[in-house]
Length: 268
Image (cartoon, rainbow, N blue to C red; front, side):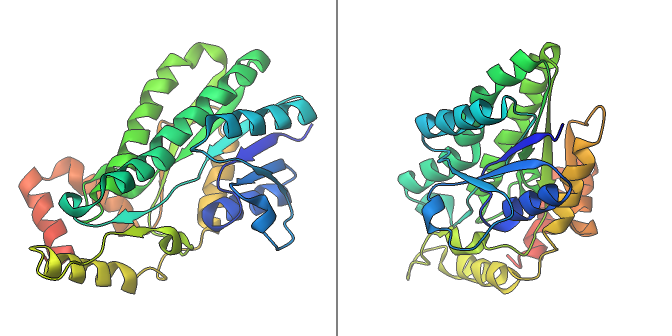
């Protein structure tokens, strides 16, 4: 029997790559979008409406899939948004939005899928986080915080659900060539702001390298390997060597030395 997969944010970027890859491997895949009607291209997988900021929308999508397929084997919490800016100058509502999508949304998805997974006594949840979630990056601190928080929530929920036959894990990608930048909130570079030059320079650096990321199919292949692992680890990383190695350095270097490396990288 083909396993049934739900992927949030499955209409573009990493989510779409995962959906296409798993469909080609014979899985029954349901991707999601806040507005499926706006997706004009023909997709090889099912697309249902789901807004991670709307609990009723989440529950409706899960109920629809379970009703049709009689099961839900794998859930990939992929939907996410980017944000840049000095924390001091980032509007409160934008801070709430990024946490709503990157943290509260995945939590609500897990709360919705755990009952059917517990009933069938098996299931796998993969939370797509970020290597940025392992460190506070200048002018990306809110994004780092939202993804880092999801890593810790996953650690806790693994222990809380260990008796249900449900497995939960994190997959932290580095930089990949997707369209995330088009939906990223950029706090404006304010003339006369004390952050005008350092933030402006950092934003230019980020934008210059936005298309230099790896192939999203690398993430899809890692997801497939996790699915075929009997006992998934707590954390997985996928990305360029130096991006993954940066986590190792953070664990072994004194805090101020590591901070100096980041400052040098961003030319701050």
